[in-house]
Image (cartoon, rainbow, N blue to C red; front, side, top):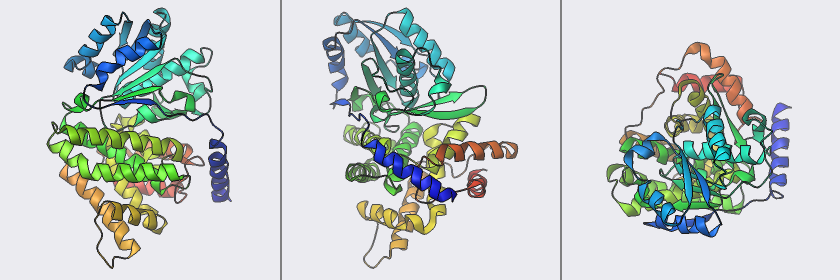
Length: 399
């Protein structure tokens, strides 16, 4: 009965999604495309903007030219740079206060997924000033147009520049959850590969595997459309062709550009087709132990795919063919196994660990409960899992 409830809920959500006000960001892409953004902001009639970023971005100075461009366009800006990995409610509230106190008219997210999630939370607070962030947890709790929102990813992983989700952490309860609403999709996205050239190899690896997880979980789910399937396939192909090159040769702008495109496409795929238990488990690891989201996904992905068993053999076999790792005569199951092995091999080549260190046994019951609450009934996973299933998976991934 519970499985039937979950599947019915997912069918209703898929049907309803066709009625939602979806949009795609207007994209500026290519080398030095960031230099076009200040003029674009000016064309929107903006005079004051809030920039949401983090200390890492400030320290490496990759935002300096953009700030000079804003000044040349007579656009005032204030910078919120206290965003932490797995951004907190406090981050959002501090940035929101800065937005209101400075009479800002638009929001610029500059960085990885954390500044983008924080910026989306700010946008939600701007249009829903009487609602606190915890009250917007879940689906369709915003439903109002955000101020002009410009997303500048400096990693190639989260795809947040294309998605409807903002993931927030409660620093007091260690809960990590998503706010999901089409109004959170950025209005503009800048995919400039020059911003990712100095990305350290370990972050390149983790964020790239984050993008792969988005594409794979979207593809194997049960709420796909022709478009999301196409986005996922193209993203998987680009990642297998370009991630290791980006990791080992960070100055290869072609590889960097292709990875940005892959992350964006994977974001486009999962924002409509959703993700699955990999993300549900990863969010608990971020909430409890601040494990970086991409790293958590990279470690967890092969374990969950193996646990799904024959329910994912067909779609994984199709992805194995996409990346060219099958041989004539391979059965569907053999192709699927080869795809999972290819993920493991990619992790190994980029020195991603096989286990998560530091998971406490006493935390597992609450982590299982939260992961299940996030995933069921919302995520249209290939196979519905229960508490014992998730407990088994946590035991498999823990050191």
